[in-house]
Image (cartoon, rainbow, N blue to C red; front, side, top):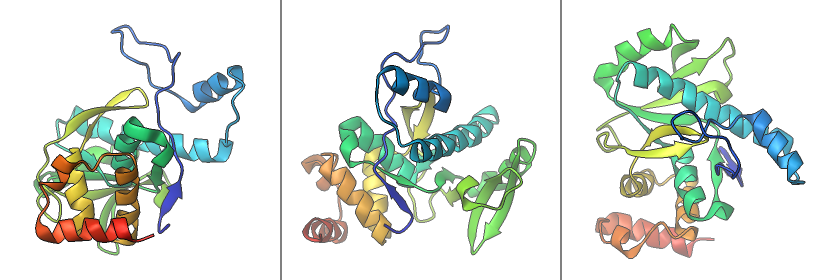
Length: 222
């Protein structure tokens, strides 16, 4: 599946405690395992641990950007997962990376700020990314995509991901971005969103003829 891990579920589960402001507290992997055990539910431990690790990386990176008031939004496979799991979690799939849209003009500030919080900036094969911790593993990578360069300007929606607010690309922008990129993994993401009922007739009406033709091809391809 070209960089995809199939079948993920990031749903905030019932019974998760609220914080002092009445908001859902951040769901930890340990709390998730305890809730699953108490409910008698089976768990793919290795898979779920990887999932929580990825979301933890998302939270660490966006906490830094929020602290410095740096505009950003979540894009890519993890954004797809967030929308799909809200609509129908049976069709979710999880990317191996965190992808964030930022402004190129903020890049130097991001490098400086991230360097004080356990991240390191690197440019690998033309991809700007932040690596967390001492490892060089792509599992700890936050890929940076620049606003207005292959993706629309930043104009996020606020979503809740495992107990924390995250700024996420609007669904219509996500659909158009995936159809514009049109790689194998983008087509797989489109199938997931389509199966979850996210590509509505209203959404289709916003597509250019070229993007509409690509959507038609995705739907006709097994």
